[in-house]
Length: 173
Image (cartoon, rainbow, N blue to C red; front, top):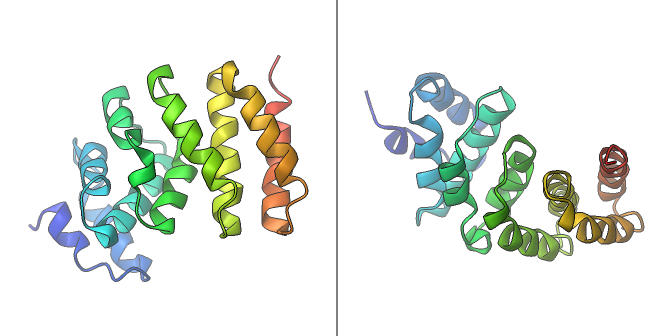
């Protein structure tokens, strides 16, 4: 049986059927999440895109990664090279328990992405900031500032995500 990294080499950057096959073959392995993070943090941008999609999919299914793996994933988030990888990481934040030590760099990265040219990335960066604020209240001002900006965004996608974030933040005491 091929390794996870080797199986991902068939991913062309578009066809998720390959990624679904990889998930079916490897997602039950004990070190699956950690191995995906290792690939995401590696130097092959296309493999990182595929691995970040797989991580998002796996976490959405109820799996989790530990604190050390989360810290590794979010160490120097500005090094995620492609917008697809950045988007997938933004979308995974809601499933992660974020230690205080990694939040400053992650929040700074997300703040920068709220001005990205791609609307989905702006929307999910806002969502990520709200996730951090829900776990660490000291980021509430940054999330609220980004929310205010997003409510006037020209993109309907960003405005819709802003409404969802507003509902999330309303749950704070």
